[in-house]
Amino acid sequence: MQVDQKSAMEGVTARWPDRIWVVRHGQSAGNVARDHAEAEGITLIELEHRDADVPLSALGERQSAALADWVAKMSEADRPNVVLVSPYVRARQTAEAVAAVLGHPSSALIVDERLREKEFGVLDRYTSSGIRATFPELAEQRKLVGKFYFRPPGGESWCDVILRLRGVIADLQRSHVGANVMVVGHQVIVNCMRYLLEGLDERAILDIDREGDVPNCGVTEYRASDAGDALELVTTNFVPAELAQQGRTGAPDTPAGAR
Image 1: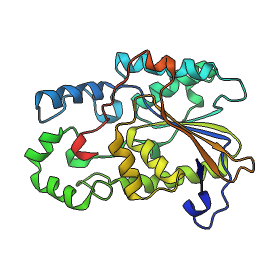
Image 2: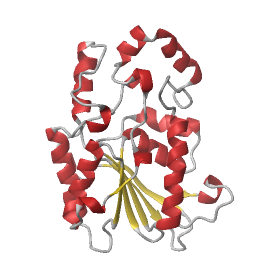
Image 3: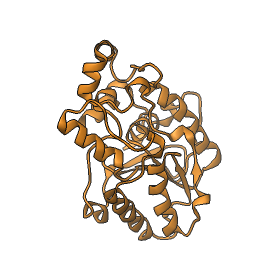
Image 4: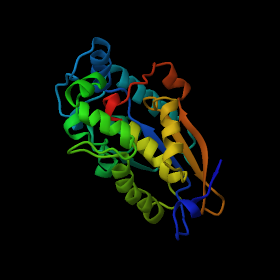
């Protein structure tokens, strides 16, 4: 699929990295806690850490190792030589596994706070049922406004996330032309990057979101045209064979009612 970047980035003659991989982190302890809370009808997701410090689960560690094994099997020319990562622990642990097989120290990772998880404000840690029970007016407002534009008090809308990611895209075009770049973030980050890189609109990205969750360590890949001025979508939510053997979860990072 050829992406028309001239229409997606108005007034810009785009130059791109040779390859871009956008990856969701491995399963986190938060994913596990959320599944339990939703299944039991619990209002709040029980976590030991603030969201930024939630680590990978044991399965998430195996998934990250499998992702790293997949990268290790690439030819030297095809491997990532730049790794951008969210500052959140679960994303950094995933990226560190990749950096290790590339022979890069963890300090070589480019930690970018613009890749952090969507912020949920007062809805943080609430399950879907918990949001409806505790914040019925906000639940109704979200229905009216839609998840793309809805901003919970103290939190962000998808549009807010997209706004900060526009700066990441600009940096890819300015600082990493011709490079092989892996971006490790979160479910909403993957979808919002797709919105920007593929020139999508609200309906298209929400249709994609409704199809299902981004798998943990799932890979969406783009390649530059021969001229380097356009991107081709190669694959979406690809799960390498090594990773599939480790198991996967569809659980999002965040309360379903807030996504």
